[in-house]
Amino acid sequence: MKSIWIVDDDQSIRFVLEKALLRENLPTRSFTNPRDVLTALNTANDENGPQVLVSDIRMPGGSGLDLLEKVKEKYPGLPVIIMTAYSDLDSAVSAFQGGAFEYLPKPFDLPKAVELIRRAVEESQREEVAEERMADTPEMLGQAPAMQDVFRAIGRLSQSNVTVMITGESGSGKELVARALHKHSPRAKGPFVAINTAAIPKDLLESELFGHERGAFTGAQTMRRGRFEQADGGTLFLDEIGDMPFDLQTRLLRVLSDGHFYRVGGHSAVKTNVRVIAATHQNLEQRVKDGAFREDLFHRLNVIRLRLPALRERKEDIPMLTRHFLQQSASQLGVEPKRISDAALVWLGNFAFPGNVRQLENICHWLTVMAPAQVIEPKDLPPEVGVTEGGLGEALTPLAMPVPSEPASAAGPAMLGEFQVPAAVPMQKTSGDSWELGLEADAIALLAAGRHDVWDELTRRFESRLILAALAATRGRRIEAAQKLGIGRNTITRKIQELGLE
Image (cartoon, rainbow, N blue to C red; front, side):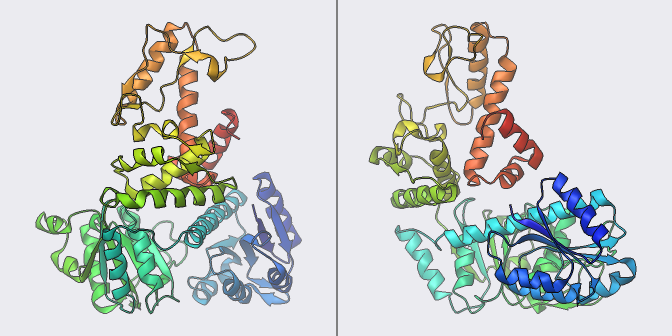
């Protein structure tokens, strides 16, 4: 990974941070003044640039605030942490609102400083993932008539600032449409900011949207800009708007009405110029009837409605999308792209894809990692697609694996090719929703074979499948895979080593 750049004229500060970060396997590069940092930035590229910048506020030869301003011009998404004495804190807050990732008052607690830098690293890596996805992914793919209607609608809206409501099932590509609307609008040079209102706890959502002032609540040590301020001059995409808490809907309505809002704990109105694009998979009309969504907000958002078709409504696009995702996944993982046979495409075309385009993309990532040959055949498709000898709709459980005909020797476990299913315990066939039955069948088979490590064996296989699926879905990015699984970064690294998945 790229290094953490530390800028401070105090050698003891640099030394302490360098040693603490190296213990966390975080590489560092140190500077004594802003001038040297700017020189290094001018010759840096994507590989040797900074992951995070940690800078003092007052140094001989330049100010940390001036450095911040110049760094943001070259690396607008780079997290910058400003180290400042308590006497400088107020001036620092007012001087670069929205510029710094966070403040680190001196003297600081070293473990807390390392944790703050760790959070900044994770934020930087999330930004890199988002930028890669935008750069690598074409705007939209589709030849089906339903998608052509969507493309025509985007074209008609290209020079408009009107509010748009995008509806469609989860995974159908609503954010992709929102990005296309932004890219072809007069606001294209402004920021595109997306937020999933269903993914953020209610207590934090208000601060995420509108920002907060220093001291507004416990833990609010600095002023922070919300998404509305971040999107000023551009587009704000509010995904899953139907899940927004009712009391926040009132605040959102006011912003849409006059463009003004207050930060949490603030007393001065903030003006913002933002185009709002909303999206939902829910029936908002029914939500209004149920009293869960404000009718006036519904009408304010529902100026232009754009419906995205489910993938099962545009099956003629499946071959093109599959080949695109296989190519994209191979490029991300640095491997040769796999090809897919016509027979396998027929099976994919007959699958309902409840997860829509996102599910197809994840399947292609899985195939890139797991398919044994360069040409993907029906037997290589994941169990959820349902390719078995019994026909469509039946699938072997993902955990169903044969057990050895004889106990493993002391030299080690038997090879997979030597495994067979005992006649007394037939392999279970289950639907994709009842993989637990397959797990139970595996347990019975292993117990019948006289194994005494059933718990460890099945746990190992279960964890391996989960981690491999997450890595396939995130193109091999461990931190993002850990986030999707709901486990820690250190946990996934340890498990990969323990399970031999390197």
